[in-house]
Length: 498
Image (cartoon, rainbow, N blue to C red; front, top):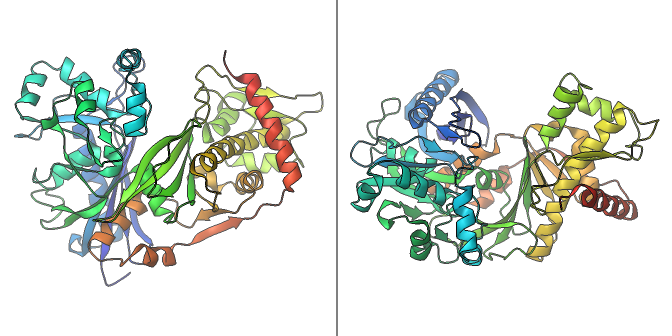
């Protein structure tokens, strides 16, 4: 353990909160997780009790200190990463939320987004925020809360209420209300921020019906926002010094510091982000433009983002519905039992297709079946379908950014599948590097906090310490790659809606 102390990372996720202790050599010396309730008031609605979230943070931090057998006085700084678009409003005087948090998955503002689209706001939203008009983002959630909680709008306009994503609420609680801030990455996911000017946009706030008085100060991703005070489970005086939304934190945790570097997180779905440097490219290929990070007074760094709806969930489908495997890790052995997919193709569009297609009407399909097709062919086709979807996003990123991919860094549960990673390298024609630390979101927030307090000196210092667990070099000839990609596009066209 470094004698320089430790950085505490709080990874506040959708189903639970994780606390990590990171040392100067980027080693995880402690990890604890505590889950909390999911609340579904009606179909398509998702909420969290904010007190449950706070208690999960308390429990995870307390547990990780006990597990690592270290005193809280060894914590040099705290970094926070969070489920990005989840929205909460609270009373400034009591810190009590006026309603449950509305989760990023919640679709209750679908009609409101349709109204704004019909009113002609879509181009303005796209141009200023880099986003699409969708209930995914925070702004319409905050507006819904003001409309549906009695007296909330009058209190908001009087300056009595505060709004934020969960990074904002956690900093507020950790600093006893001394800091009402968010960082640029979370602000860029609200649909209220002009990502080019780096400020809240009054016209966008007016469009949504949000008083400017409720909005937090937009800060960088790496600076001292305040110090712990009156927390109870941590001593006073620890700097809270790093914030990034989960996917941007993973990009930073993967040390993708140069334009053209990209990461893919393989979970239920897959999130792919590419660093585009100080340029915020407009996407013509179905991607989002977002802020990657801003370190102190340094330049704002941007990223292109693409979401694949179904990745690891396709393997879960093989296990739970088809029952051709008993556990997810078995898919690699089964897929390796055949030399290739035998002409079988799987398009895992179980929830429609995400980027770059954004086709909610697409449906999943297994194509090319013959009498000789077996479980191994279907398993291998499933892994190929996951990798093809990521390749679709990466190709769109290269087209939008004008940059060739400088390798792909990978993390997440499905990244443990070596065959999937080899297929990914083959389809991209570039090296795929699997991080030695899979907790890249927590690591990213810890790195940002550590930079702010001098725990690490620079991104070069961090890049020198980043390590891959394993790298996968492409083995497929470019001509065969081209044939596979063309055939995949044909398969996608067959399952698309309309």
